[in-house]
Structure formats: structure tokens, C-alpha cells
Length: 525
Image (tube, rainbow, N blue to C red; front, top):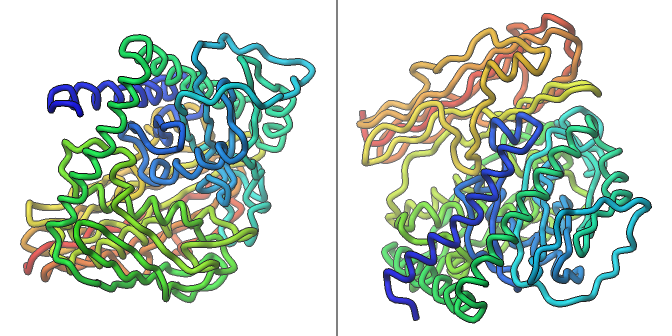
């Protein structure tokens, strides 16, 4: 067992690896969505798929990553393999989030040689020492509309190319034919290739840093340190959950339609808190729906872990030990445990937000120190043609808490990205930003006010497609302890209000305006 100083040193050393992986990816990527918005995540896993350490990246990416590692383990991953996947039902989240996994070998096998013709991937070989994992949101992966997030899509095939766990490299050799067959199904294939190269490099950096630690400390010492940190995080997480009042707490909230039907879709949870353990049962949640607001269980589990992480002291390392304290159950085929071929693009970005909201509502009844609801949507905006694609999620208001007002104009909940700087957007794409401002007064009233949303207004300079996937357009985020709700958001095209999940064909000069929700207030005004 490590003493406290040794434990902190090892925790920081482990955490530094995915942080460096993420920094390399961001600085090497071609697309603004990864390079500027930082819509990407990195983590390091044990040989049996348990999280060792992660960077402070995107919650919806990170909480679902173990499923991706388990998928390649089941597919026969061996040391030196390089895998990619995005299938939401086999370790992914939604199709634009493509995961690269390097099964760490005992010695470096780079530089990667490009095979031509394709190398026959043999399989076999030694077991990996660890897994270095990088997930990034590609601005397009094919499908019916640019951006690969068509509102109202009914099947995965409408949303883009589906990549099951696929070995694309082995022993330092990249299978160019296998990768090329995937990239050719996407728009802007040269940009996709550049972003893949950045992901491969980031995963390779993680593998190199792990080998350096093995060389420095020895594999046995390193594995003992991992075990100690996992047990320590589990112990601290249980202690934090034990501070809640034991019992069963029920809550519900709603998604505002699926892009095809406007009827609200219920998400219900029964949260059982007992002896420092949390069990979440989503029985009673709406069935999987025709549109693409469904999500796989991995995303539901990711939202649950995000909420638990907010209850744990910040000095506790985020690793697989935290997940040991949480059980997530949902009926097969329901909205939060969908099955193929249901489409899921909006489920990853919008339903995940509402899952987090409803779990927080339940745990607040157990006296969890949680804020009022934040904006509860990622405000997904996509513009594009076959030649270019712009994708962005927009910030809004966070809920207020007993500690003070909610932050204004921030990404809330399952998102943790930045915005696209106006200078980059206007330089690279035929789009002009007409207005970008705080939506003053949109936060809920209270002893502490909720944070305000934003206004983002764009003029397109050539014909293109528009896709909007948003929520909280009918009902604003709830306040807490007597605080008022935040204002709901609103979407406009040329000054005319449109729905929360819509697509349109635009002409040059058309203006798209999004007003994002404010956060709920805390305490009676």
C-alpha cells in the first residue's frame, strides 16, 4: 500500500499521461472542432478495461470509454494493435465520436509505416500492457446531411458510417486500405485523415509515456500503484455517497420531442442510496423512439458517473474505482438503453444532459449539495455542404447554488468544450458572425441568480444545409430551494422561430440565431 505522498505522486504521474495525449491531439488536429473547440478526450486503461486516469475533457466521452476498451478486448486486441470504432452499440457514443485505441506493447513500434497494399492483420501476439485511448468528434462522418447529425434520423445509416471495432494497425504498420475505405465514406476526407493522424499520434504518445513509467518503476510496482489508487478512489467515493441520506428517491424529466414527433419523452429514475453505494434504475422511462434522441446504455452510465463525480472531493483521482460504487439499470429497448438500428446522434448530446438532470433531481432529495438545473442542452448547430462543415455546441447558463450565482455563458453538464473563436470561424468558412453576446436576464431569480445564456447569430455566405439539435426550448431549467426557472432557449431562421430539432436548406444571406437557456436560481428571491 502506498503512503499518502507516494499515492499523490503516482496519481499525478498517471494523470499527466492523458493530459499530454490531449494536448498533442489538440495541437496536431486539422479541424477547428478538435483544434479550437477541443471536442476530444484522452484516457489510460488497465489490461482489463478499468480506467487508470483521464484528462479533464468531455464527460460524455470519458464515462463511456470503458465500453470501447471492453469491445476491443472482446475482439481479441493484442500488444501493438491499433483499433478504431464509433458503433454506439459496441463501445461508442454517437457516430461522429470516433475512438482510437492503442494496445500498448512492451517496446515502441514507430514510426508507423503505411502499408500498400493493405497488410493482413494477423492478431495474436502478447497481451497488451495497457490501453491508450483517444476519442474525438469528427465534424463529418458521412450520412444524409453534412455534419452527420440529421435531426429526425431514424437509423444509424442515415447518420453516417458505422465503424465496429476495427484493427487498422499492427506492429507499427498502418492498414491504409482499411482506413481509406472508411474515410472515403465521409465528407472532407483529407481533413478526416489529418484528424486521424493526430489521434494516432496522441495514442502513441500515451503508449510511450506508459513504457517510460514501466522502465522507471518496474511493471510490478506500477500495477500495485494502479490497484492502490483504484481502491483509494473507491473508498473515497463510497465515503462521499455515505454522506447522503439512505433511501430510494424518484425523479422524472422530459426530452422535448425526437425531431419527428413533438410529444415529450419521459426519463424516470429510482435512485437507491445505501451504505455508500448508488443504484440507478430507469424503469418507467419512455421506450426508444423513432427519432435520434435514443442513447445506448454506455451514455446513460456516463451521465450517472458525471453526477457522482460532482459529489466527490476534487482531490480524489478520477479512475475506475469511482465506477465501482455505481450500478445503472435500464430496460432493454428504452430511450436510455436503445438497441440497433435506432439512431442516437441526439441521444448522446441532448438525452445525456437530461439523464444527468434527472439523477441530480433524485439525489437532491437525499440532501446532496447540488445546484439548480443548468441549461440542460448542448445547443448543437451544424452548417455545411459536401465541401465544408461547421459544427458547434453553445454555452448557456449554469444553475445557481448555495455558494453563489450560477456561471454565465458556459458549457454545462455532459459538455466541456470551448466555443469556436469568431476569427477562426470567419477565416476558414463562408460564415459571418453577426452577433455573439450574453443573453442578459435569462438566468432564474433567487437568493442567487442562475447564470445567463448566450446569443449566437450567424449569416451564411453561400447555400448550405442547417441542422439544429437542441432542447429546453419549451420549459426552462428548474430552480432549487424556491429559486425561479431559467428562461428556455429559442431558435430562429431569418427572424422566424423554428423548432428545437430541425433541418433547413439555406441560401446566401440567411441568418441563423440561437438564444440559449439560462440556469435556474437558488433560494427564494
